[in-house]
Length: 122
Image (cartoon, rainbow, N blue to C red; front, side, top):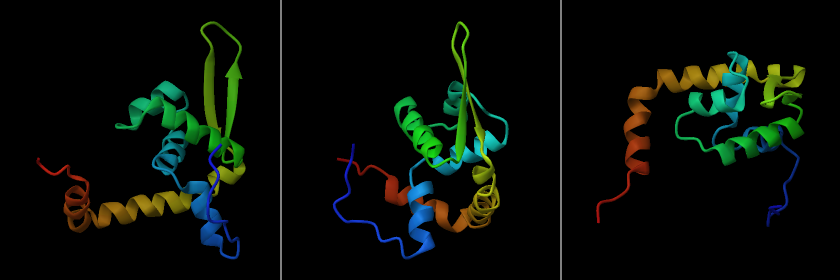
């Protein structure tokens, strides 16, 4: 498992929040699950650009933090569904506000983000 070189200081709530929500797709996963997208294959389709491996890792981390619960149905073919826990539901207002902020500032920020992520021509 990855071990951080610099120890975390838990003197600030932001540190804890960033540890839980830090990750490219975690907030998108929580939002999608809150909207009723529950199965891993549906989540991957709902989050374009994501990979199965990264989504599975981030789902596992959110489950470890008790943000999500995982239900395994013992049937053929196997079926897995995720749902938000009580703790996970407390994140929804924050995530919805982040979404709203992004939508309100899209015109200003989208060109900057695109410019930063473009691959330079060689």
